[in-house]
View (tube, rainbow, N blue to C red):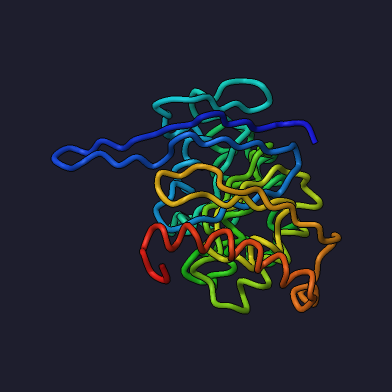
Length: 262
């Protein structure tokens, strides 16, 4: 698969006032193919979210190079969108109005905004809730609105920063399955940050394990499991072997960071 996103020797250090500098990324190399679903796992504080924000164009690296489709990333762009762990919905806007927000900011005419947003609301399984407000929705429904809002501007790349972490276990399983179905239909390139080894293995084409801070690529694990995937696949020996491979790679970094188990 040809490289669509490419990071080479990426480095970024935060330098807050009156505190010691914190190097989040150092020597990070990473490649993503177009249409690929790639997950990032690593110890807390290893720079996973920082990397997504560099890719989104909100943070500028101190060194190295990051490119999308061969073009250097120098700031935000319409071809990239983020889905955050916090739902970030505007409480005074309905589901439809929240999904329309990005299109509205782009100056898309109201009729076109309405049509595009209605299609996406149906895609994420919220038809019938177009005129509900965020406080009337469950956590899983709010995250679906966030996903529809990110898809509304038709980005090529979808960045997801622990989007299901705040959900209960059953809703999280359901959202994972729905995300895979949406990804299969929408054909987006997805970079997904998670602390869940099982979630990473279930969703991804490949899993990147990052080192303890400063983050860099420690291992690239290809998920050789057929698609489409269902819940029962998680009960197979092949799936458990993949989880064990990810865990054994990650465990070394967790020990390096905490000293626990050393």
